[in-house]
Every structure is written in structure tokens, then in C-alpha cells.
Image (cartoon, chains in turn blue, red):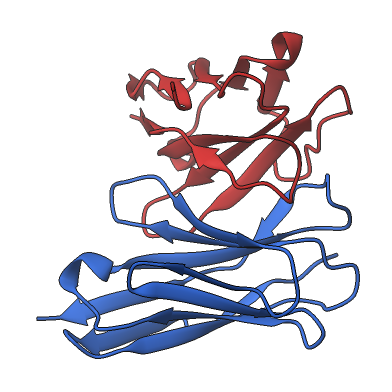
Length: 113
Length: 114
């Protein structure tokens, strides 16, 4: 059974600071790694889906890297803004490319103005 | 294009009643998921449909919960004999195929059992 783990569980960052957090997953039978942003009272929205080792994706001030050989992905936020406050979830397919994705428990990010 | 839609957006029901929640996925998406978020909790997987395969029901919390997906499109989540602990936001998501494709979430149904 795939175990997707995220750390830290929560993070408080000063506005303007940069931050990053981690998602780890089993490196065997890798198919894809997803990142989602989940704002309070809203539904999760996809940020990135990454499939290749060494992938780096960027959307505005948010970027992510992927290391499939060692089984981790980092999400970076540059120059944090209050609107970045959310729970960030990563997820990966369980045992095949068609299987359901397994979500980590998330990193809850709070930006202090 | 149209996203994932869910209905109703809010549902208040009395303990012991049955409820049905509906999800309309994005057209052409073969994968459909149901999740729920209880107050203060994270995303809890309930059930997964992928094409014509047997659904993965491993997340359903009890036999009071069931779901169907008709014609590979619309899905209905049914909760029988509702209990107060069933109160939660129920989210539906769809994706183009299975786990390698991003999920698109609906706005959710907030269920309150009184």
C-alpha cells in the first residue's frame, strides 16, 4: 500500500519570506506526483502533476521539484503572500497508473502579515 | 468548459433519514472519486470509479454508504439512516483517467444531520 507523507504538518511564515515543504513517497513503481492547494471553504485545486525524475514545474511564485529515485518532491513558495495561506496536499497513484491516487495529510501554511 | 458540479450544495436532514448526493463529472473523464471532509479534518477517500472496472470501495466507512455511477458519467452517493457523525462536506472529483491525471474537484455538498 502506498504511503504518501508530508512534512511539516503546519508552518507559519512571515509575509515576504520564502518557504518550502516536503512530500515523500515510495520510489518503486512511480507513476506521477500531484500537488494541490486547498484553501479554507473551497475545493482543492491542482497545482502540478509531475511524472519525470528531475522535473521542475513553476506557476508564478510557486515551484516544485521531483526526485523519483529517492522518493521526494519539494514545493517552494517565493515571497509568501497572505493569499498563499492554504493546505498543500501531495498525492500519488497507489499501485498502477490507473489506480486511485493516495493523498498525504497535507501541510497547513499560514502567512503572517 | 463546464467543471465538476455537485448537488445539492447544502443538505440538512434529520438523523435516520436517507440522503442522495449527486456528482456530474467533466464530460469524458473516466475516473471519479468521492471524498469527505469532516469538521477540522483532512480529505478522506470514500470510493473510486475508473471506467468499467469494479469500483474501489475501500474508503466507505460503513455499509450505510453506497455509490453508483451510471453510464460512466453521473454518480450518486447514498447514505442510509444518516447519523450525526455523517455531517461533513462531501467532495466529488473527476480526472481524465486514473492516478496520473490531475483531479478536478466539484464545489462540494455540505451535509448536516440534525
